[in-house]
Amino acid sequence: MAVSELLRTETDGSLSFGNHELNEKAKLEDFKHGGDLMKVKTYKPMTKLEKNGMLVYESVPGTSVYHFSESDAGVTFEVEGSEDAQITVGLEEEVNYEVIVGGVSVGEMKTGMGGKISFNVELGSGPVKVVVDRK
Image (cartoon, rainbow, N blue to C red; front, side, top):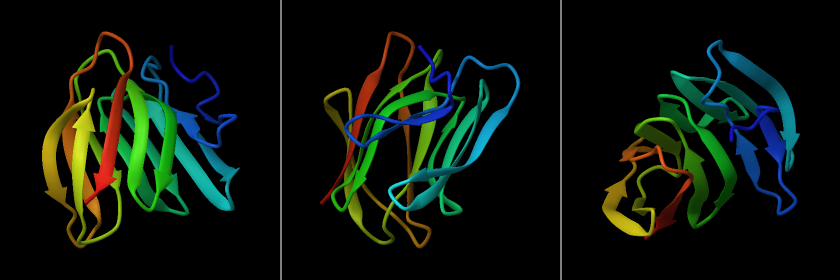
């Protein structure tokens, strides 16, 4: 169940994006969302979302992401893919976050100067909820 339009705004204001089933790279640029310009690149090997030129989300291999929502507290989303993925999210620099995957805490991580954290998610049997919560 990939996002056929590559990037869309949901009725709750969140974003859904990515298509992990594509064999060829596809991208959508200059998508307006909440006053920002979003860009998505996606296919089987990789999915990447940028906001105003800055990394928001990246997965290797590619994933489909549903109801991605950012706030001062962190990010929440559901992710789906055909195999386990390494996910990187762009957050605030030098802040501790707790990462919860499928309802289980995988630990606390601190962002560095670039404001990014990376973690692995086991995929393959439907969407998995991910919460990255500011501590």
